[in-house]
Amino acid sequence: MVTKEPNRKELKLRSNLKNVKVVEPNVGKSIVRRIREVIPLLELREISPEQISFDVADQVYFLGLDSLLDKRSVPIPVSLRVFGFKNATPVAFFDVVEYRKTVGLGERPRTISREGDENEIGSHGFVSGEGVAAEKEEPRVRQMAISKIYMDVYLRARKIALAAVEKAGKGSHLRLLRVPALNFEAMWINAEDQRNDILVPLRNVGQLSIFKTVPLEEALKALRKAARLLEHMDESMGG
Image (cartoon, rainbow, N blue to C red):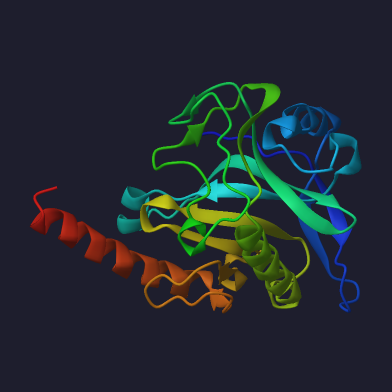
């Protein structure tokens, strides 16, 4: 499938690392405008859309179960995850799609409760089978949420990933990798030399532990093992 990468900008890491850069997505004016239009649906208390800044964004990549099991592990870019902040405090995140044709996506944004719970972690996103086509149109918000638990986990994993970028090398891309069939999400440092790719899981799945950095190839092996167990369970249940 042919995909088109979003515009990108290089940002120096906000850390003690010197002369280390990571490539991050650019949140364009049209995306910010669209997000501000839907913010009132969240009913944020005492926060107006104009008070929210959008300083953190990650390209979201999807990996299907069939691709994982067939070892054709080529993740597909499906959306842009944008975090909104007020005074450096995260208040919501938004999954934005900038492509005309999508598969398996609803037309209305999903909302998730303010409180959230442990079961929500890793379940924020699209179902298996999502994909994109390369014809662009105005951005659409496909999902938005205000779960503090999830945002805290996400941003902590992101911070750990940024600290690990020195090992991956200059020009690395910071992304979110999702395997919905396994309810798995991880921050993904995608290096120029893919042998240096690193994942930071957002939750425990099989042999993978939350917040523990792991090389991508090692993580894929663990995910395939978990996927085979899931496949065997489906067969035994007549699925």
